Image (tube, rainbow, N blue to C red):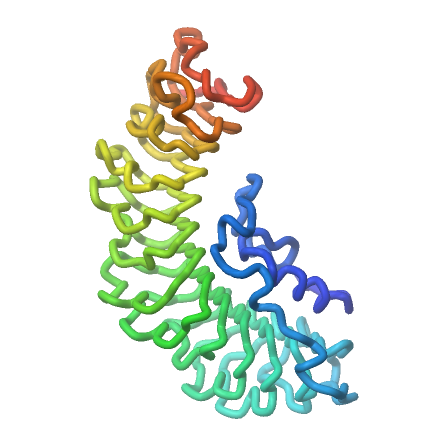
Length: 372
């Protein structure tokens, strides 16, 4: 589907840059969001809410009338999508802050393709045929913060990414390996979306994420059979849905104590070892839907901030009175506002009402609709 951006997109982009990536809307939300209410920006990010916003007045004092043939240019936004381009166009104004090249036929990024674009803030290359990137292609982009290069033919993470980069979306490519040092020097990076690549656990070299202080990481729709052990310990959100993970062992989550949201839906998880969730004291949202669990995971009552649990479409046959809520009052600091248990072989009439004594209201509980 072709996407024609309105001329006010740059203003929208700059406003969005104050929020975490998972709160983006419209085109900028590449199906990251599962439709649930998001966490508060300030508490989820741990960063200054004014950081990452370019000062347009300081970027350049003038506006150039240069515009590539066939493109639409306005307010430092150059929109060249859906033109059948075979290469990055020339005559792009040096004061450009957003360059949209999505939905074209570009197959290669050459050394001087972005020469002179030192003010570029966002580069969109989604849905092209890029398989080759010169090692110095991104060198001029000293202020680039958002690089969207999903749905291409890349077999590796691009080399020498700009040190200013905050957000990298590289999902739906052909990447099988993440070598050590590929993210070296990217101290500002807080979001990486790399799902839809044929990545296995063995594809992550030890130290591949060294130096990164990510808030958000998604490696969904890959070929993972377990939770990777060497991801950044700064993560607030980790999404590993649509993989082949079969179990969560005791120390799998040991280093991820800052997680607010964990997505493990659409895997093959049969077992969650006792105590494995105890390493997640700040967890608020847990997705374990569409797995093969036969019981509610132990340890949920001890997660004092947990508010949302997805357990639908599993093999759960029994729900105990203390599976979700702690014994006694004043222990849980945040009540549940969402528990999904539908499409499980649970005899719901046997579930005691006290099971959900720490839920905001009965509408927050989803039962029923089980079919063999």
